[in-house]
Image (cartoon, rainbow, N blue to C red; front, side, top):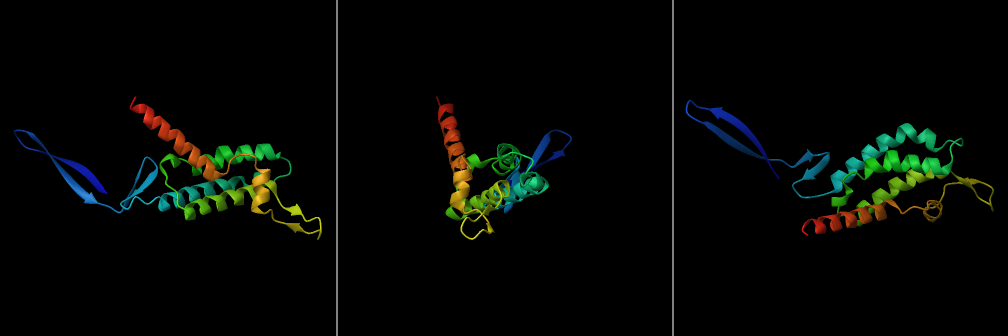
Amino acid sequence: MLFTHASEFRSSTSCNFVYLMMRVEEFKYLGTTLTNQNSIAEEIKSRLRSGNACYHPVQNLLSSRLLSKNLKIKIYRTIILSVVLNGCESWSLTLREERKLRVFENMVLRRIFGPRKDEVMGEWRRLHNEELNDLYSSPNIVRVIKSRRMRWAVHVARMGE
């Protein structure tokens, strides 16, 4: 990617602008990391780090028995998910990136729904992914990204009309 920087040199008769072009590997633009390889992997890593930074202060709320599951899900959607999905309309996800996003979401959902007592053994256990999908009635994070991409594509298509 090329990054331009304008510097002004004034002479006695006119103003001249000199543009210096500098090639960089990556840079941040409007909060999104752009790379020269057009790779979205670093952006997703950055978003997941930001999501973790939002998750850790509220993890005690998400595991509290004083709050309802619906309120915990609203906290997840408004505080954590909005940070992770900022700018996701332009992402083209690979299976590896989809898996990373699902792992992050399942971590938060396991905190919200808590462990379950096994009926046969009588021991506490973590919820399986299928159980989390059943308990969380909303679309998973990958479906949300795909629906936002479609909505954005329709918006861009209508701009030409």
